[in-house]
Image (cartoon, rainbow, N blue to C red):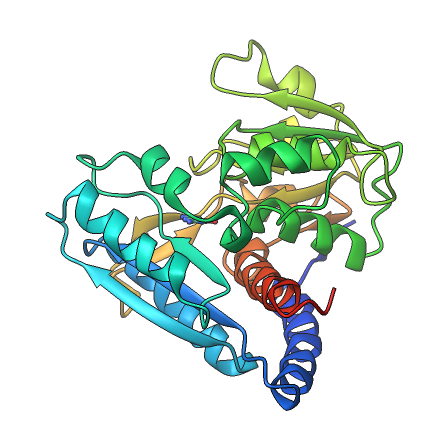
Length: 295
Ligand code: GUN
């Protein structure tokens, strides 16, 4: 039977409506959540992500402080902008869009963010707190994946989740979140990566299969168990002259074939992507509430 498609746009719209109400109430109390966004260079995918994030901020009433630096900016130039945003009380969250141009050290930039404004959940303090079960800003894509599962009625507790991909932005934090001792965790997680031998042997055992590799068609239909839940985090631009933009976005999963075997599946685009942005907005609102002493 064909899978039910998880509509990430619809789930995200529901959360954004809740956030819009919350922001309106905060504004009545004199608190306007603010997000500082830093983009270095002109990588087209990054420009598009940042534009989407800032548009979404506007839609829910979050103030955004846009900082577009030239590609040739130095580490010190970037640090100056981060320091200014760290010191600005109107800014409750800071997002440095990754990847940075090759000559810049991402870890140095991330370490420079005040952890209390790390709404991206990628500073080592946030990651350490998340891993040890302390309250922390959760990294947006893995948090979005969990919210998609929960809001689609998928039981995480006790399930076997197989994650393909071990990045710091997705695979690694997701594995940690899913093994936390709480209702949105308590899963058994297998983490696979580029050096995993016989990948299909593991993916076929998944109740929930998460692909976060960035390689189209990494997950083919023979690698999926009947009735599995399949979450596709991959986003790759593939040339397509029939599209106005000259490209289309494809995930890591062979969607057309796998949708005939899975019970639930996310599309690309319109699956995980809208959730990533939404969880960034969520964290920014949380940070503003914390700064105002409201939580
Ligand atoms: N680039 C792609 N995804 C992300 C993300 O979640 N955060 C940041 N900072 N950069 C990204």
